[in-house]
Length: 275
Image (cartoon, rainbow, N blue to C red; front, side, top):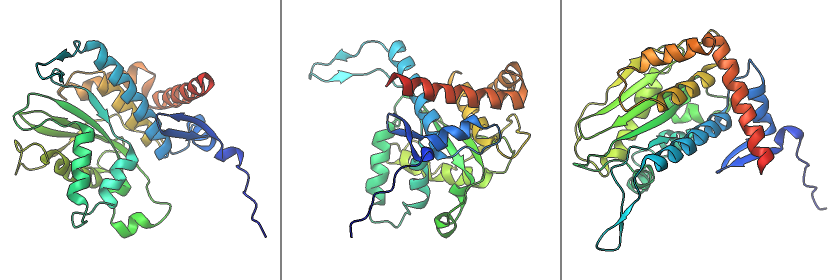
């Protein structure tokens, strides 16, 4: 007897494929709701969207590449921001243990993909890393379905002088353990091509962040942090002040979250309609 392929439900229907960031109807429904916790697909879409905006902005600022005597193209020092897919962070944390036979190979691949500054380089790089509390869980806990209750944003700034991590958590301190675990792991990716910071202690600074007033807006707040900080210059000296200013100007914490949900949802619909 031949099996019948089940029909897709409306919730399973693919709304948008934006540079491999897939958004289904069920994902869009989370953004349309004022009380839903955002899943990986929602986080990944907006991180991908921010990546596109940063790349376009960097291309406009960057002088035209000049051709070297060997026929190669030389780009000026890079300062482009990188916005990570949460599934990549999850892979790094739970599917790539140090004793894996492919560990060095996979870490080297990530290093090349992230285009991290090399030893003695004057390049600078900012990496925005969405952190789920599940990233700090054990591998056995991670394998159980239904895990993950909180999102925060980790900002990693790499320069020749220092490697710094700022953790922006809308439920202050709740994700610290996971953020520290992620920071320690991503530094391994940097050390593949950069020995300037070998042996340095990984230090994650908890940054003052506008606090959510409920149990479901953590993902929206994390994305808001990334969007606001991406518009700022390199360095976190004025990050805390600017975050609170932007949240206040956009109606305060509760209104900020609702508006950002609507804006991301509208963006998805507009992109889907243009396909």
